[in-house]
Every structure is written in C-alpha cells, then in structure tokens.
Image 1 (cartoon, rainbow, N blue to C red):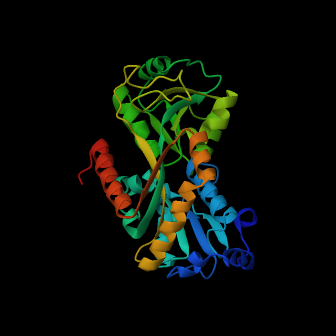
Image 2 (tube, one colour):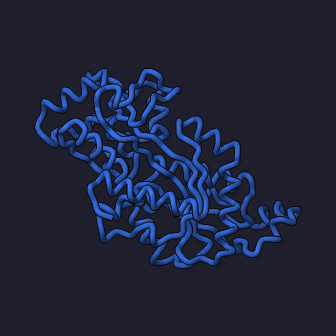
Image 3 (spheres, rainbow, N blue to C red):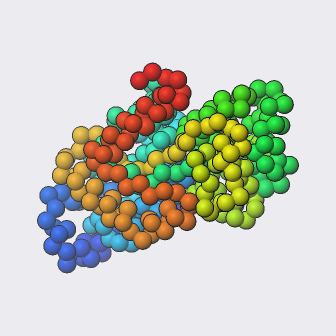
Length: 323
C-alpha cells in the first residue's frame, strides 16, 4: 500500500491550514479528526479501483477534507471481502468510506452468506456504466453475429469469458440466455485482471464496462462487438446494440457509488454527502465520466437507498431469484 499512500496521502497540517479560511468548514457539526480510510473491495486496475482513485484525487486536490485520505484495496468474493472488513472492524466509524456498486449488491443474491449492502450506509451514487462484449483485437470474430454463430456451434461452457466481478457474471448470464448457450465465466479480482487475461489470449471474450477498456479499445488491442443498451454509443457508432443484432437482451448497467459503515453519526453522514456532492460537481469527475463513456447519475441520500432497492428487484428478476 506504500504507493497508494504516496499518491493519495494528504498531510493533515497542510490541509487544515488550507481549510482555515472557510467558515463553512467550521460550521459543520462533524468533520474528520484523523486519517480517512477509503476501502476499495476490488483489485487494482479495474473500473471500481479507477473510479475510487479519481474520487480520492478530487478529495485531495480540492482539499475537501482536513485530514489524510488513504486508499485500501480489499479484493475478493465479488466485493464481500471488503464489505466484511468494514462491517467487522470499522463499525460506526465515520472515518471509513467504502466503494459500492452493482457487484456488491449482486454477490449476496448469488451467495447468501456473503456480506450485503445492509452492512453499510449508502451515501451517493456517481454514475451508470454500460456493458460491451469485447474480444481481442486480432480475434477472427469481426462481428457479434460471427461470435454468436461460433459459440452456438461449440459445446456448452467451452467458450470462456473473463469476469471482474459478479456484475460481469450476471451480464454473461444475460447474454448466455439470449443466445441459448452456456458460457463459462473465469473469475478474476478486477476488470483489469480480466482484461489482462483477454490480451494474453487466455479467455475468448470479456463483457465489461467501457472505462476498463478505453485505452486498449482506442489502440485496437481489443475490439467491441456489441453493447447491451437500447441505442448505440455516440462514441462507438460502429458498435451495434445486441438487439440490432437479433439478440434479445435487456438494458443492463453498473451503478457506482460510495457508502459509510452502518449506523454512523447522522452528522457525519451529512458531512460526507456534502463532500461527495462536491466530488460529483467537480470538473475532474465530470471529465472522467465523459472520457469513459459513462452516464452521470448523481443520486444521494434516501433517493440513493430507493434506487438500490429498485436495482435489487431488477437483479433478482433477471436471475430468477425471489425477493
């Protein structure tokens, strides 16, 4: 974690001095008094890790808190390891943030004993991220029709897809059902690791979010064959939707936000909601979302909790799991 601390550790004295001129900062009923730990329940290099580092960058560079911020990757179990860590050792601690997303919500649906979002307090959602099906740049499959035809001609589970989490697994499940052929998911700790496996020729394809693949997509190292949304991306006008290609898949997106440990002081929750609103409004975050072909979706407080409940129903419906 030394590199993380170098990148994202802000000296408390310097930050406090910078905040001294702001009366609003001192009007808060609660502010951090020691290091803030930002837990990322996924491996380095995936979409969740990348977004967390942008959030950290904004907090540090815009001096939104008066104490150091330390990023802590706790990958494993589709987010369950990180949430389990927070629920076990950071109870009610307002100096702890955790990244949450659709994966941390789907994992306990598929694995009932896994820690769930009920263990944390949602603060704010930042964005919605669509899914594309990627193959290696030199793949013989030039179109999604080519890929589907080849997959359907092979035995079930003989086509391997890399996954960076349970949301990716669910996207694969949705695609598998639509084409009537079982695909074998090969699980990794992050989308970055799944991408590495694709580039190395160890898997046949990956269904993932644009933000994890943009650089390699632009360089031609990977090729996008289809997108699971209702219309084409303006940024990728040549990539057809699955429905255009005759594949009846529902619109499926990844939400990405931040939470606190459960039962934190309400004043601390209000403080962090204010901080995250400033992050969402920052030019850095807006540029990041735009550059990675995602959709701005700032949802906060009770609205975020209601949104999560709606997503729970959607995920359970898609998976055939009763609420």
